[in-house]
Length: 122
Image (tube, rainbow, N blue to C red; front, top):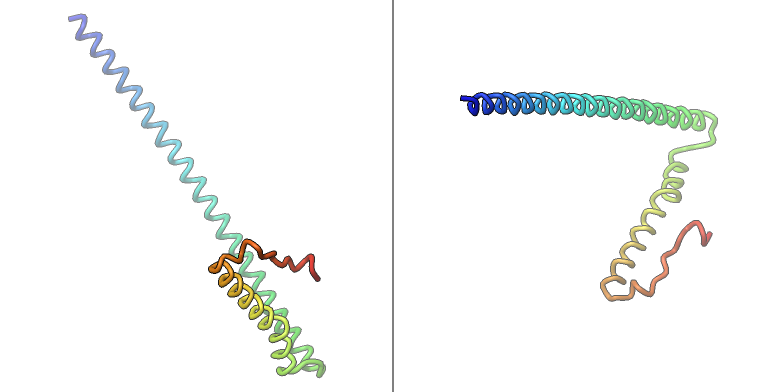
């Protein structure tokens, strides 16, 4: 009979430890879930701020463009020329450069190439 009592107490102890472990795991899970939720809310808030800043930048660019056009210092032809010079041409050159590097790597020449670092060679 004493062995059954000892087995009973052992079983109660194991069940108590399991309940404590389960409770601890639930508490840790709940806390980590709250941390994830707070992190996600923070990222969403930062994205909203970045979106508002981008919208303000676009508005500022529009105001600046209209101001320069009213003063006669800028027209649509100037804008398209500047866009070609400052945006389209560098993109085209970079795409051509990447294509040349890709072709060179196919032929095993890439080991002998020295990559151009724009900050050094200007």
